[in-house]
Length: 114
Image (tube, rainbow, N blue to C red; front, side, top):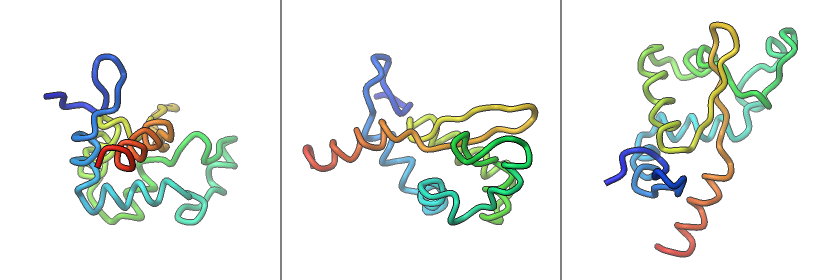
C-alpha cells in the first residue's frame, strides 16, 4: 500500500488523501488555505515583497489554530505527503499552499469512482 499522496508514477493515492482529511484540524487548514485572504493578514507578507501566492507561513497557521508548532508542522507534513499541499522555504520560514491539481484529481475520483 502506498503511504504517500502520490505513487511513484505521480498518481494521486485516494486512501492517503482520505486519511489526511480525516483529521478536523488538517481539514480546517485546507479550508483556510483555500481562501487565505479571509483567514490571514497579507500585510506582513506584502511588506516582505511576498503574497499569498507563495503560501501561508507555518507560524501564521499555528497562531490561528492555537496548536503547538510541532503539531501544526506534523499536520502540514501529512497534508503535503498526501499531495494536497506544496511548500516553499524562504529563509528560515516555510510557506504552504494548496496543490490544486491533486485536489481536482481527488474530486474527480470521488465523483467518478465512489
